[in-house]
Image 1 (cartoon, rainbow, N blue to C red):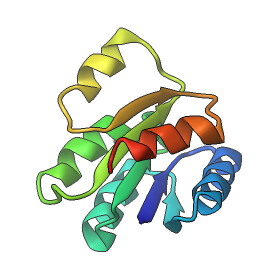
Image 2: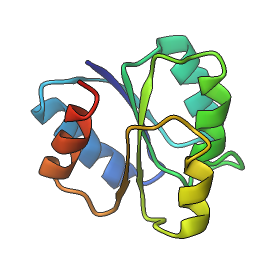
Image 3: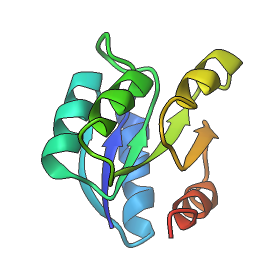
Length: 118
């Protein structure tokens, strides 16, 4: 499985990369901007996108997901965010996603979420 990581915290992006590799999946890259999320999800067509909600630019993870899902229905999305508020959860419901995890997450949390895809 090819995984794209969209996370603006560089340490967390590295940690997620290590988790994905430990689960024997391939990391296509890590990006910190919503605009990159849109471009890379369309260009690389990953099997899975691990998507933070708050990103470096003015496009958040939910907006990026809405945009790339218009042309890419095959990539699955798992939100991994520090935002557990009802506003963002409601917004996320307008997208097709597999899971909504609240930071911090464990390797086991990620594994269980990914297993929902198969």
